[in-house]
Image (cartoon, rainbow, N blue to C red; front, side, top):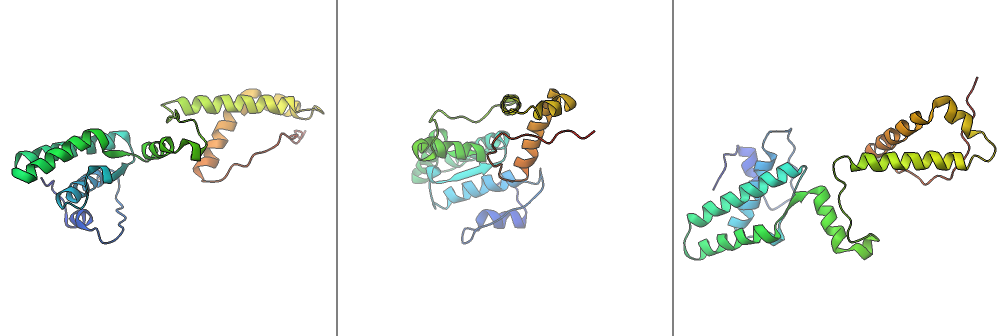
Length: 200
């Protein structure tokens, strides 16, 4: 039932008396350690599958972890008898229907869906798919540019847009949003206002 672990990894798997932070670069076995910790929790009867939340960074890692856990549980059931065998078979069933092995986005989504009223969101909310975020950014940039020009009562914004080109704004606004978001900075709600006139 054990995958090969080094001494530090084994400590991370077996330690439950305190919070742990395991830091390692890509490909060094973080998913393996998390998988073994998950199985160790079950083997020591500290909890059952529905009580464990395992969070990884990617869907691929979450899928690999689920597959490894399932395989190890099958092995444990095959190599056990009596009450132990029944326990592992029950955990195996629970993995199929109630295991929380997911990405941070998936975990947050499941919490939001359980509390849509408190969160003030549509219960049918979903995680944006590949490329959908860029599409929404492009639409928002186009809308922002339209609002900027519509609010241009004294005609000061139009020369700036014409000088730089509408395409510049449609490219720059999504890029600026990404930079601000990745920096963890709040983006305040801004009222439309005139841009400074381009200098000669």
